[in-house]
Image (cartoon, rainbow, N blue to C red):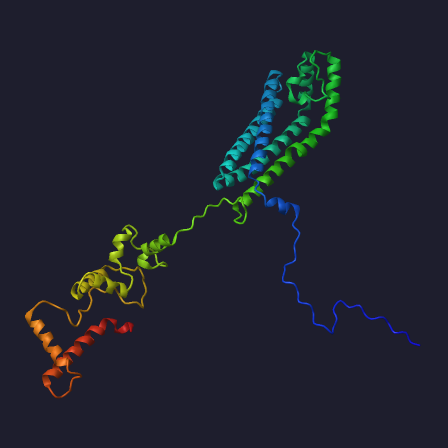
Length: 378
């Protein structure tokens, strides 16, 4: 008898529709460095700069004291190296003090300058550690002579190189034979530490310090970070509108042609549109005064647009058809025209006088609306 196989265990059953996928984004696990980056590193940078300033100041003081001992023992090469180390560490101390002040002030200019100077400080400290180790091997003869001379007088602690346990650090004078034996043994025993100190106390701390300062500089330039220091002050709506109207006579894409005149004076000299010119004419009172004002403003208008397909600026406007003037003749003529036109539409051909008057009106209107100077632009 055949045995029925067990049912298949499928993830999705074909008899039913597929489940609706979730709209939530998959959670991404952040690394430890990304979590640390979210914090503001300003206080940490200040504390680290203070610690490095103290460390470099101590190294500079030791180098200065070593130079005095070298000059007294007539070791010219060691004295030159000690002076160079003193200057390098002093410059590094100055940079770190500037970094403390600049980062504490929270000014972007100071932070950017400190990020550049921190790299210089790292280079100086690394160079100083390499120079110190190179001098230990290259000037070994002068160093042994100095070690023996200081051990004979019991002042070996005056030199910073001889303060470890391997060197003869006794405070009382010792014999010449014992001093030579101890100095040579100490030099052989401490040689490997000079190479290690270049990386442990020179290169690695300097580079780590620079990376931390550079990371804080990135935080200061990151707009989404809490340590953002780039100053941006948005302009208010009223100020921006006024500044746009203040420039170029209302045109934002054209170079300003008259920046010396204030906005209040240019507002009356440069109307922006025909509607505004008409509004200016009505505000001046009457059609006659408005026409004169429009002519004056149009003559003074200069938009600064050098385009061949645009008409030139108007020197004077066409006079209107009906210009109200004070006089008995004009008042009688206007009353006669009103009486002729009031009954209704004119009857052409009935009265020759009326036809002449109406024809003159049409001619005047057409002359005001169309001009030969602007036919080529229509």
